[in-house]
Length: 359
Length: 238
Ligand SMILES: Nc1ncnc2c1ncn2[C@@H]1O[C@H](COP(=O)(O)OP(=O)(O)OP(=O)(O)O)[C@@H](O)[C@H]1O
Ligand SMILES: [Mg+2]
Image (cartoon, rainbow over all chains, first blue to last red; front, top):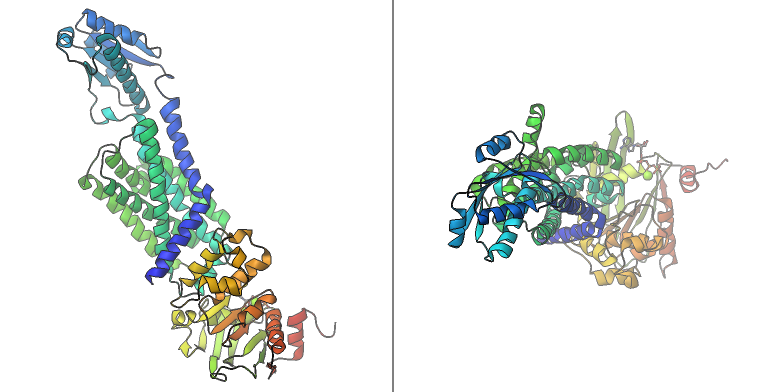
């Protein structure tokens, strides 16, 4: 297989896919639509939540801060002792508990004070907008009441996911989901080519199946990298979703995800003959995988489904993307995800090279 | 029972005229109990137009597809351009041009992009410029394939089969005017077809050219009736 063949086949196929606008745009559209829905629709302005405030300082300053929260329309404020509110919080009756500690006014007068906030992380969507709301109110208090930026800082208490807004959680999942849809569709494309006689046509040239598959993998990797850039740029610009990890590791993860999904697409194309069948099976694979693979929710599937969740390549792709984008993790946390994706790739490609037919 | 129809061009300039380009020996293909191609043997010489005609289901397409490398024979040998067409399939495919029955083009690519990518599949290729010129597609070179007319698509399809400057050309169902493009350039191609219309067009084009005459018309292993049936789909007695 010559380099020229590989390069020209890659260019041609990337061109074909990019000119089939609906092909790559639909999955991006679903991703962007989902981000808009969860980023805006479920934002702090629209859903009420229970916020407990334990004012241990009982000063003028702390009272002013409590007032600032009382004026927030969608927060139902309750004020009780810290102990009682924590009990309710642990029962799941409070979305968050804000503690204004003793000596708050003192410290504020010296320039810097802190409040503590405990978030209930069991509902990530709620945790996201509760945190956004608390931060917004404190910012406003700093600006309008104290007149000093960062005079009051928030110490979040829920660990691990405390900094994860739902949109932060969702964005990597949308990248993973888009990679899945775009690349599974290679099966659909191959069957269309077979029906149009294009595979037979290529079969009477010296092109090897391996070269076709390699060039296809490269063109789909290019397309998917572009899709990931679009989604992540939208996340950054519109929803302020930060990429904490390395771009290189992110690129590698995307490419490994592309390969794993392509290999499934090839298996579909190898065993099915008609476009309708490929569509049906493709959807049958993609829809459950989209949800079970944790694209949208940190869902804990029923134990019966856990083995499936643990086997799905999308689970590992999404996990690696979140490790990178949300937590800025390094290779130490990625290698298992990468290994599973590579295993899917190897298995799928070996199987489809064995059963591949030009016609 | 197939008819093998052949014509040689007496005035063809190639010194290699008369060389055996393709030889089949006992070529056989079975589909389960059905023997689709039954130990068929023949030779085709350089510069010949060779038509293989016969009733539907006679095994013409199967024979051609074995030669082109799309199907593996159950028995027999195919020697094409001095190579074993089964075991040295890709080496053979580098030097032949195949126009299949369907146009088999990517609708989303432009004319020039199509010729470029097909050319890149071969170690040797003719320039995109010369191909669009020769197939009267220069004005359309930046058009998408899906926006071409039927005849233009047909010409492009033949052009992709000739982009590697093949020594032997295999023609499927084909619009008649395209055949003259096939034989336009200097060296005589060996033209091989299992389509009656394409074979006739090749013969007519050949006999129409200055000094060229149909030298030879063999009908083998078949009665004229078989040929007639394949040309018209009717029986002589009807
Ligand atoms: N893939 C296949 N599986 C089983 N039988 C097949 C297959 N392909 C062809 N055949 C059978 O083999 C025989 C020869 O078919 P072939 O297509 O070579 O005929 P043909 O001479 O090209 O006919 P036509 O003039 O109709 O094109 C037919 O009886 C056909 O039904
Ligand atoms: Mg046929």
